[in-house]
Amino acid sequence: TQLLEQSPQFLSIQEGENLTVYCNSSSVFSSLQWYRQEPGEGPVLLVTVVTGGEVKKLKRLTFQFGDARKDSSLHITAAQPGDTGLYLCAPRGNTGNQFYFGTGTSLTVIP
Amino acid sequence: DAGVIQSPRHEVTEMGQEVTLRCKPISGHNSLFWYRQTMMRGLELLIYFNNNVPIDDSGMPEDRFSAKMPNASFSTLKIQPSEPRDSAVYFCASSLRSLEQFFGPGTRLTVL
Image (cartoon, rainbow over all chains, first blue to last red; front, side, top):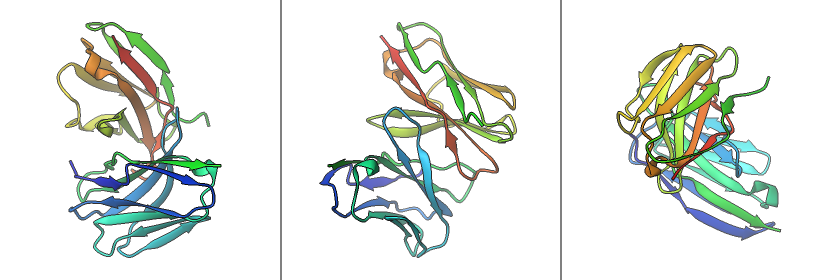
């Protein structure tokens, strides 16, 4: 099992603010996915990053994969209440087809 | 497409009882995953199947847990006997060629 750390564990901000959440490990990953989970529902895929140093943008969300492929960050610009949810990173190991999930960052955006 | 279907959505049972959770993956997907989610440990992979064959069950907590996938459109996760510490939300997910995982709505299990 891969050891993952997501930080912060909880984050509460005002609408319009910017934020960054992190996913760190001492292991190297072949790829990494970010999911968002809303209360009472299953996680939904936001993005997959594969190449070290890769940056992907999805509207106000910017995802970065570390150069060494051991860490990743998610930056949200001008957060909105609809961004509220649990953000999970899921790195994929170098063997097998499964992704391992972190415990997530629970984000609350206050109107 | 209806997405991944799980039943029941909620289950309340007493300690010692058998619990069976059901999952219907998205048609055409060849991988199926069972996860358990708790506040303390987050989303844990229990077992996954590829083409109906169990590939990795190292996440199954103990012998009280078993999972089957008799065909490409159905899987079950059984807990017997159930214990209060099994209380959690259990998710089933399916994928095609291990790309994006599509999650079901989950089954919230409470063992009293």
